[in-house]
Image (cartoon, rainbow, N blue to C red; front, side, top):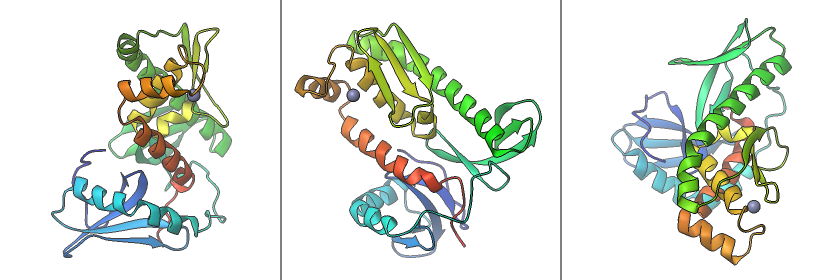
Length: 247
Ligand SMILES: [Zn+2]
């Protein structure tokens, strides 16, 4: 993850070392990290001029401590996701303010956030529009990645479909030669989609997770283990990302 632009003193939501973080810039001497009640929001206070990459390195060094600390906080029980004003959606690793509207179903991105338009304000209706958007996003990005990954590996699936999957990021039916991807991959940083697509492509050649499979993954994507770990960590943390936890 690279630079994400300058921060405001009021704090901004960024992903650092796989954690959703409220980053606050202050005239302080060093970077401090806190996990806040009631729901375990991570807040990082950093000196005004410190590079984001340096802050990320420090957060990364506290990974084990952070995970343990966050796990001691409960999930927010009092709130239910309504896809309404003041909530957020994740898109390619970024947290985007939701701008709900009543109208023809669809999503459009504007500088202020994500316009989520549905026929009614029912959460189910809005959710369906968002998921359809995610599905299209993953389809589009996978179609861009595929020629590159196929040229690299010499593997081409007979088809790639994107669907809602309950428990997996992707599957490969190696007999049919097809790959299926989870539409929720649109919530995570783009390298997570690259990793899952490569992983499933390699199953066309190696059906299981044996030594040869991992050797190929390492060859084609040397940081695959870090990306997979990030994806799983972000997944655990993403449950509360739609709402502000600060008091
Ligand atoms: Zn697999």
